[in-house]
Image (cartoon, rainbow, N blue to C red):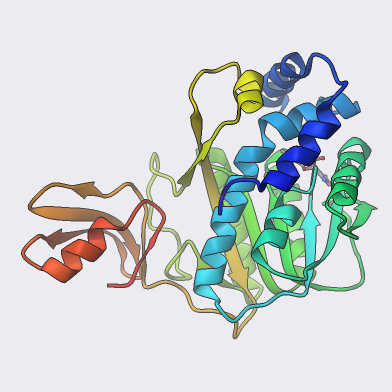
Length: 317
Ligand SMILES: C[S@@+](CC[C@H](N)C(=O)[O-])C[C@H]1O[C@@H](n2cnc3c(N)ncnc32)[C@H](O)[C@@H]1O
């Protein structure tokens, strides 16, 4: 389930009551965010955080949920009891993880007090006894590790060196699986590849999206990213100033596990497949590199299975 559950939507809708001019705030946040790349300078008041929650949270929630579904597929026996959501903002990844894994004890941190206040209000609305802390991604040291660590759309706000240092800390706090989700842009993908190399060196196994721990075989201007479609509610459309009833959120991600957890996929569909009545062509990333795997219609069972596959899915061969 990639879309925010009705209960979470209702809490945010209630919190938004009485805040005027949210659509204007949202477009100001988007515009400044595009210019500065960080939210700290633009999310200063509670109305700003609510505008973010109304306009961006549905998409980041959908991307994180899609990645957590992939984690479940790759590691069906993984049942985390503790979660750390780093750079949590309103707690998007924590709430998505709570929908995916039962009984998860949640710790969230952010350096922006305004976001933490909103996360606290959402936690109260959900009756979730989440622990909320104010820390910086560059210096946090909680003295304990967590079964699952999430960091969604937050590393993108850091400089290159700070991103690698934050990745080291995230990994030090991970006893099971680290999930990083970033915007699906070339810059963020490239930085994620540097993080990936660092985490492999530190003993991590990349469970997804990659089917191997070798260097990424994609060559610029190509970059590894995926897409999730989500429907837009009336207020979401209003915030976005658009008329389309859906949006496609592009994201890049990494699911990195400690040894012994899960199994990686044999291959992954890295672009939308092409289909005609004679064949399905699957652009795959496989252990031996990138390939176009063509499944002819005469091979009926394989053709039927291939027709069900979409961009981002695992390919079992
Ligand atoms: C785009 S928001 C994403 C929020 C949330 N994770 C989500 O997916 O919706 C980026 C978040 O990263 C936080 N952040 C940025 N730099 C940070 C830092 N150095 N330390 C802690 N949090 C940081 C921001 O305050 C903000 O909450």
